[in-house]
Length: 275
Length: 275
Image (cartoon, each protein chain N blue to C red):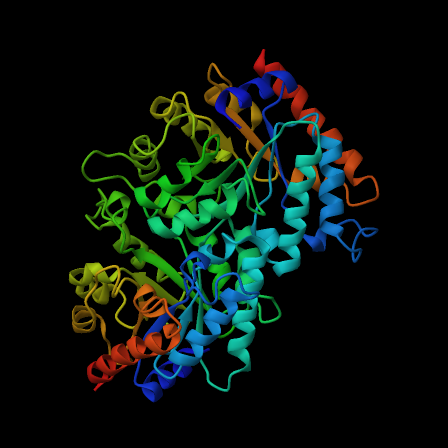
């Protein structure tokens, strides 16, 4: 999905919501537990209930890999299902990969190649290994790298705020600045933790045109208002993720209905901010 | 595998060689290409030919994920095969994962849980997200985190050498120093690129007792002599990886025999350094 297609979709649905499909088999509603394809059935119901209110789905691969081969089959079925729908949606492999150049090429093939089992529109990448670990993900037409800049977890304080002796820039700022040589706002986005909304203004100075993927609204404590205040740009420029707040809104038989309600609430707030 | 078991294995085989099973289906010998289970058959032959000369195998997951579900089945078959052998060997999931705490728990389950499809002894982790992204991997008994410190690729220069304004430490040194609070030499190793052998002396000052996983001897240009000179400690403390130099020593029908010869050459050099 190209940048202009994504912007059109956001305008059409009046939403920049991303639903995090971090589906943990231990947290499924009782009536689904133990059924064949339980994870896929759960995801399908969540998708059906939320797709009119969101523009993106982001399965975190850890939740599928932890179930071994069977988990990855559930992931493939979920992706295949999204393709059968007559509704466009942006897909994000939350994979946080990154390796030396020839190996990153293999990861890019794994998650961005349209012929592959896991053909996403984009994937998240960790920056530690630098340029050649990131650029192989920018070569697929209409596909995206989403580079970790500032994350929303406690551990973000261990390294991401370290100030560079040369220029005083913090590591996440250096990552943003340096990576502008590796891609463009047409093929590179950034992960920016929502609990750091006060940092968004500074980040917007460095990457004014780029889309930012903001995790952590909801369960991780971020405020949508703050994120919009400092993060929105003229093209929206935001994808705001909610995972647990939506997919686990209820663990009863009404889980999908309740997920839809939570997604709709966020969509309605987003529609206001988009005006 | 515990630290003392690993040290015993190194003494017994007179080797600290790790064979990188970065098996690319496009680089298989012609007679295997297109066969069912071709990747597994290749790996099995490589393992049979090299296991007496090495102490560890390190599949890089990118090469399996790029083949989708089928690739992951080949990986599982390879691991299952290793378990049927009556020869202990240390296994490394070269995965370079890392995510917020509750998600890293899922990755740990995926690759370290003895009940899972992919039950490795250890896995490589990227440090960018800090403490809570790393500590979930240290809770499995006898299993290991292998944290990226200094990598062997060109992109290593983008961020890993940034000097901290506060104390002048380079980022990779801060990663080493900080992570000592997260694990011990019993459950944490470090990736240190061999092409930076001159840095090993400094790294040894920070982590004198830890095992170092050194990629990049061979195709990536590192020198075994340099690595041993600066990296060996009283317990050996090194795992030196070779991938392409061994597994693609020949692309004919003699590929396994040639791989065995290359592994044996490295083992014989290592036996000298271990004296």
